[in-house]
Amino acid sequence: MESTPVLFVVNMAAAAALLIWAVRLVRTGFERALGAKLRLWLRRSTSNRLAAAGSGAATAVLMQSSTAVAVLMAGFVTTGAIGSVAGLAIMLGADLGSAIVALVLSSQLAVVTPVLLLAGVMIFLRSSARRMRQVGRILIGLSLVFLSLDLIREASLPLTGMSGAEVAMLYLAEDALLAFVIAALFAWLVHSSVAAVLLFATLAAEGVMPVDVAFAMVLGANLGGSIVAVVLTLNAESAVRRVVWCNLVLRGGGAGALLVWLANHDLPFAGLDMNAGHQALFVHLAFNVVLLLVSLPLVGPFMKMARMIVPDEPQLQAEGASRSALDPTVQNQPKRAFGCAQRELVEMAHRIEIMLRTGIGLFERYDDATAKAQRAEVKALSQMSLDIRTYLSRVRSHDPDEDTSNRAFELSGIAVNLEAGADVIARKMVDLARAKDVENLEFSPEGWRELSDFHDVVLRNVQHGISVLMSEDIGLARELVEQKEQVRDLEQNLQRRHLKRLRKGLAETFETSAIHLDLLRALKMLNTSFAMIAYPVLEDRGELLESRLASS
Picture (cartoon, helix red, strand yellow):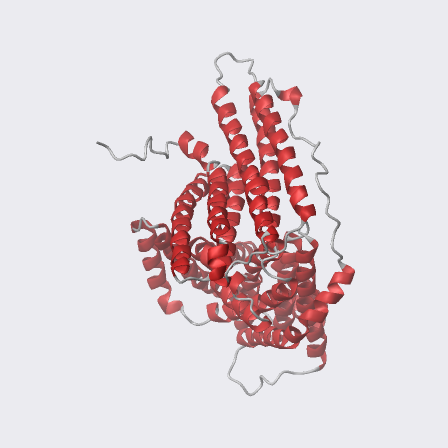
């Protein structure tokens, strides 16, 4: 069939869309299958800058995205689990990891595409285990990546004979800066520098894009990829913003500097049997390797300069507590009223998440001002809970056949559970931290690592619970309840490991035993409070059993 401009645009857009979706499919599979373990491993692997960079690179390779690593890093820096220096090292490593992914996915693996697709579909459809289904999702995603690259090659064939395309590419070859900016915008729009680089390299390999233009666009994708992390963390704490802005300056600025250098120098590819696409990919990889090697020793000074530009924000305590989403004028319109209550519950949950992130730091360095702020916050949250329940009790419908009591009861129950979770942090956790400080006790290194890891698991489930509260997604709700069971098993396992250390006679373990076990129980209680968010969603769709008791 003769190709027309419209048909070409449709084919190319469809192939590019499949590539973008396939890359995200692989990333989603890894996040759901290994997200918790990757998160834990990434936080632990920050003993030095080199280890942090290596863990960032490995995580980016597995998750197919430096942006996903940036989101994980932001959570760790916010909680104080890792410092800003380690965070920047992780980001630089993740940039290199995404370059490795692009090189691997561009390999000639078309032969295995049918095998990957068949195996992925069979595993996904026939397996009942959640993790195995995600393995199937990953295999399907990889096969679709290779398939989309083949489609891009096929769709780009007509371009080689189009005079308009040749003119456009010649223009871009004369204006490398424009090509650089276009590529950066594309990578930002699709939120994936990997997909952008694969697209540009494939077009270059097919002779559609001159090698000079491919170099400029691959470097532009590095700028666009670093912009994505900046946009996603605009409202994050200053420590996180310092890291992502530094990464933007280093990666984006370095890409711009290399673009200027390439305008006046030739790379030694002439004697190598390598097409333009592979040349672009190796430039992409070499740039990120050099960027890591040059920047890693200097991350400390970079972060000091960034602190001067982006200083720490003053802590605003209990401000905005009077703001409320509860609109009394819509209490005779149940849907709108329940929406108001739901937004207020989300605000409660976000504030509890902040309390949890702050509270764990009291066990490392107790601070009376922080403890006082926690106690003041729980009072404000208790009032929010009461206001929500009172508001819901007054929701009425003009339709006598419309029953509003069930939904009001569900949202009231969530408010009560969230209030209980806040109370666990402000009273139980703070009191335990104060007792540890007053008695001048220290956890054993292994004990503190276990507590920190368990806190991180609970924090992740708290964030998961907020997502369920906002979206009421049935899949997310099921995962949250599954995590509740896993947290229960994990807490019991950690208690056994603690008792084993007691048998060894470690003095630190004996002295902090009561605090250690009470903190485990407190965190499990908090996790349960947020897991209860999922139960109304599951019950409404008939996804819950009536009883966990075995039949007699």
